[in-house]
Length: 95
Image 1: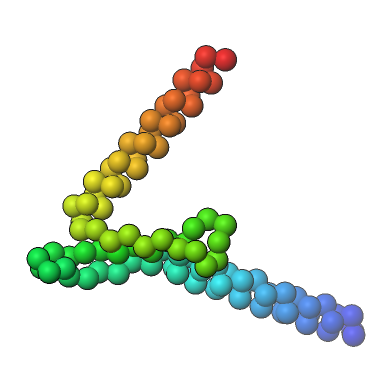
Image 2: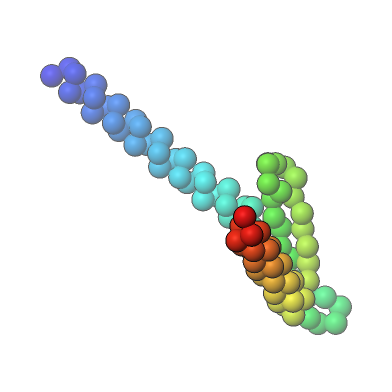
């Protein structure tokens, strides 16, 4: 009877650990991709994105731009990723 009680208590304790680490991961992810919206002198909305640098808990970069500038930036990033993927695929095909 004591063994069953101890096993049940251990299962509850481990279950609590799993949920708390999942909660921490969600908080960390939301902090890492923080976005704020402000208005500049011209009356345009300026969107600021803050991202934690990979491998660091403290170092972050913050970049602010209008929606049109963010759209252009996102398109450029997608184009570069596509170009790198295509270059890598053609290297593998040549082997």
